[in-house]
Length: 235
Image (tube, rainbow, N blue to C red):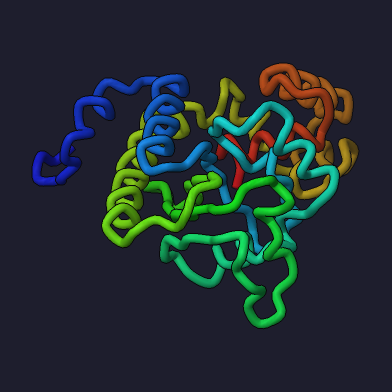
């Protein structure tokens, strides 16, 4: 990377990070250093697409099962914090005492997930895909200096995380034909419809689908499409 970029004292850790475990440690340490307890990196979907918190997290250190439990009871789309991601790209602190803005429902996201404060830092990949680095905790509001520092560090860490991990996982071993069939499945097409579109037999489409399920390590089409979007195999 261009040496004119200023990463301050965090350069060596980023240069050495190669995998999810390394970046897990970087984000986790960052969260603790600024008084938070947990972090999550979320990939944003279309604003009006139904999203589950668990399927949008590409890296996090939340307690086991917390995101899945949240999804069973709530819709992250309904929360004010989620809606704010489509109104502004400014990093924002959310406190449990915040009142709903303009009557927006779901400002109780923090109560629902069990924390008193969240810091949401919108980021994006070099391909333009939008993400949010979310820090959660039970501490008090952070100061201006700390806010600016963690926002800068989160952007640096995400940039490396995307280029070293997320971008390198794109495709996950799928062939061009499998990727094409996966894309049509994501559009809601049936096996018979896909067979007509790509000029193969329905049996061949089903065979490709079974291979895709195995390669992505999922058990059904819903999980397959969700993981493919999360891993940026398809948009």
